[in-house]
Each structure stands twice: as structure tokens, then as C-alpha cells.
Amino acid sequence: MYRCLLIALVLAGSVQAQTREEKVRADRKKVEAEGYWIYNDLAKGFAEAKRTGKPLLVVLRCIPCEECVKLDDDLVNQDKRVRPLLDRFVRVRLVSTNGLDLSLFQFDYDQSFAAFLLHADGTIYGRFGTRSHQTNWSDDVSIEGLAQALQGALELRAEHPKHRAALAGKRGPKPTIATPEQYPSLSGKYGPRLDYAGKVVPSCIHCHQIGDAQRDLVRHRREPMPTELLFPYPHPKSLGLILDPRQRATVAEVVKGSLAEQVGFQAGDVLKRLEGQPLLSIADVQWVLHRAADSAELSVEIERQGKPRSWTWRLPSGWRRADDISWRVSSWGLRRMATGGLVLKSAPAGLRVEYVGQHGEHAAGQRAGFRKDDLIVSFDGRSFRRETDLLAYALQQRQPGDKVEVIVQRGDRKLTLTLPMQP
Image (cartoon, rainbow, N blue to C red; front, top):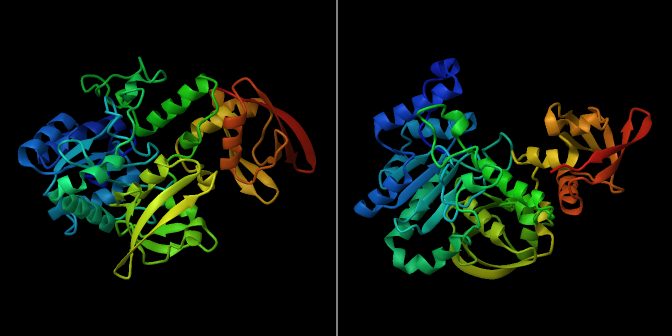
């Protein structure tokens, strides 16, 4: 999978000497020996939550995930802001999505970690964990933000019946496919559990594979890719709303001329509810945006200088497309389908080919004649300035088997190449 936060692996020196398989097994041994987290046993976690009356913290995180180490190290050091709060939860660590209940665990499957804060009856208090860049986390998550989310969940738990109706919106509709291994592209390759009797690593379904499987299913049905699958969990900053990662949902900055400024957001505003849902983190804001329609009207409740305010936030048709998807792991699958494995970067006169895939379907661009540093000036008769927009066009307007004419500038020459659209 790819996901979650928690206890670190082992000392850096020994990590260097370990294979991935050894890291996974060492991590399990360490976590189970410490006994602070329930390891990869969600049913046990829910049973313990019902027995004790505590709320449940479920984190999903792949092993090893080097990008999560910063948060993990802080937790291992028993950060004084977090550890006392963690003590008040039943803590479950999931290290794969095999057998995961997709009616409950709906989140941004491109994230490197995800956390759910739950009641024992399955009510979701909130989500934690987001990302808007391939490697930079400081703008999106923090230990302070985690502490705020944990505290917020405890407050909701203290008045659970009062908030039950408002929290209902934090669960999405029942999916047509119940667990990841039942998707056609994953079926037969993976089982509902990790294979500790054999090789653990190859038996693991990563989080991003769920999103890949959803898109593969649409593609093989020869249907246009739904916008919500291309632009999942829009980041608030794509709408001009910059939130403070150290708080639950507090506005740090509003971009001039943005949709957020137009509706009246100001720096310092505390977002209390969106579509009636209490907010514990940026991830909760993204959940509401993910569920919103192409043309949406969202109810907003804020606190400004200690006083409540509310309004309706109208999002125009196509608002999702302002987001950037090029950082996502899933973009590799989209590139296979749309550009034959080419990675494109914005350039003054078009899109520059930064990388040309070398293997299998990811080498279709290479076989079509594309080279590194080619400048794409026209794709199917259209010009694009962002890779995101080209991918969206190709996957919504073209189908597998189509041939797309691409005009490239190579040095002082213009060439016309033909790129096949792939499943």
C-alpha cells in the first residue's frame, strides 16, 4: 500500500542493510513486541474499542515508507503533544489494503499515509493525512496538526449522539466492489491477507493500486474517465485556500483573485463545518470537496475573530481542473494510457518531454519516435501548458486504440508523430 503514520522501523544503520522483505518482518516483530499498537488486525481493534468505550485510531502505512519517517520519528520519541492523546485511543496499524472494507475506508489512495478517527460503531469522526507534492510534506501535515485532529475526535466522542447526524456525511456511498482484491486488475494476483508464510512484500496491495484499479476498470469499459477519478480529493490550495497544517482547518492565506477570495475567506478564519460536517484537518476539507458535484454549492460555517459566520460557497463548472495531478503516483498509469509513458513538464511554448519510458506499454512513446527534450506544441490539434490538462483531455476525449497526431519541435525542426492511446 503506501500509507500511514506511526512507529518508525528501526535504527537507520540497520535499515540500510535490510531488504524490503526483512524490513516488513522486522517492523511487525518490533510493533508486536512493544504492544502499543494492534498490528494489522482491524477486527481486534473494533472489539477493543467496544469493550473499552475508547475511540479508534486506524492508520494505514506501507512498510517501508521513507517519506513517512519524519512523523514516525516524532511519534517514536513520544512527542509530548501526541503521546497523551494516543493513550486515549485504541490504536490499530494497517500495513496493507488486502481485505480492506472500501465502504468504510474511502480516502485519497495516492497518499503516503492515511489516518481514520472512528467510533466503535464505525462512525467516522475525521481523517488525517494529505499531500500536494511528491516529496514536500511541510505544507500539508505536522505533528501539531495530528494532535489537533486527535483532540477534535475526542471532543466529538464526548458528545457522540449530538453529532451523529452531522458525521453521517463523512461516509461515502457503498462501492460496487467491496474490497481491493476483488477488482478485475487485482483479482487472482492478491488475496485478502498478507502472505507471511511466503513472501510478504509481493502479496501486499498498496493504497495507490486501489485508485489504479478503479481507473483501469473504467478504461477497459471504454468509458470517458470520470473527473472525480482524474482529480480526486482536490486540495484546498487549488481554490486559493491555504490552510495551516498545524491547525484543524484554519486559513493561513487566501490567494488573490481565487475562488476562495471571491467568496469572502480571510486569513485567520477557522473553518468549523463544511456541508454541515465538523472538520478535524485539511483531509476533512478534501473529503467534502471530493464528494462535491462539478457545479457545487457548499454550506460554510466559520469563526472569525471569535464570532460565527456562514455562507454558501458556489463552485463553478470545471472547478476541479484547477488542481494538479502530476505529482500523484497514479499519474504513471495515466501516462501509460495517454502519452505512452512520456513525462511532460511545462515550458514557455508548450510541454517539454522530460522522460521517455523504456519498458512495455510505458515505452509506447519511445516506439512512436519521441525523444527527451522534444517540445510538444500540438496534441490532437490542441495546445496545452500543463501535463495535467493534456492527460485529462486524452483520457476523457480519446479511447484505447485511437491514434493521436502530435506535433513536436526538435531543435530547429518540426515533426509530426503518431501516439497510440492505450488501455
